[in-house]
Image 1 (spheres, rainbow, N blue to C red):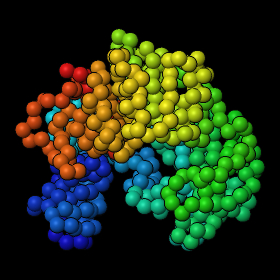
Image 2: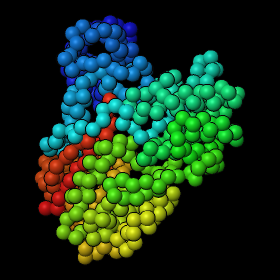
Image 3: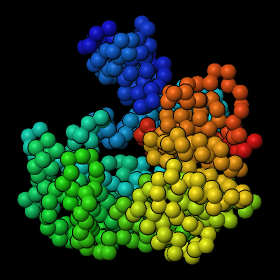
Length: 464
């Protein structure tokens, strides 16, 4: 098989990115936009050994699970990978993805419950981050990044974003055109506007215009307020050459820069950097389940990688007390504000620092208490020292939450003993015996991100 070959094959499985896998004369061919069971005409784009990558030229026998994508730039934009699948097929794929990844990477063969669906399959995202740049001709482009690149695919709207997405795109383009502003070119480092970020909180909007230098945002503030209603607008100056969304310099253009709101009975203050799950409906279901599992006979909860403290506050109400550990100072400060807003002093304790550095101190402070550990790390997963500390903690329950099945498989494998580290290298324990202090009670995926390859997973471990 060579580049530019045209082949015909039947999809027999899926890759981790949601692409279909074809077995063609002993070569695995990965092609996005196809469904298992479909016969497809494929153009080969690259070949590396016995693995090839191709694009679909035509579906010769469509699957009953195939649907018409809603987005006109689906397959060009890197945001969604599964819009061509029925929602039932998406849920089945994500359930299978979690089970397959746990087995392949972690050596874990365990039942995975069917993925819990999202209440909304489209228009579910409460947060929008739009890159603003230039096209090949130097004209301003507003849209979303193409897969595995920083090339902007221009878009007028996005079906997985909230209904106000199209309005934001139109307003930003009108503001820039009316004020002589250009999109920022990452290669030449010329231009004015780098991106716009907007979050909806209870029908109100926190917007951030990210610029390469000071610009007059008053016209944009007026336009946003006229169109959306209650808006707070911030100007962020980002002069860096990296991929960071925001720079260090902030200016408030209108409003106070934050809104106070309430969710699941917890009052909170949301700003531009406050972390909230993008899918309100699924977040509520997930957090309620975590709080229910943690509320176990007066236990103390230890919330690792606790962010802005929303989950820590829920745990403080459900448990005897809750300790949140978070490395980002701004997030930890938000958690302190949240503690005061909800009258949780004496039950909620926020610690700012690296989890691996602070964990022993938290365990010392809670010595003699029944403990439940909740761990929701970033995509890279837990540090090895944290995994080891959790493994030896003696906690009655360990609740893992992950948006990355691969790092979940690694961390979970180390916790239950199907993986071991030798000289810095992870190896599967072939003659595995359940010697760990913990066993898997259940594994539950949640579809936090419909139409995309991403999946959130909750794992409950119980002490034997």
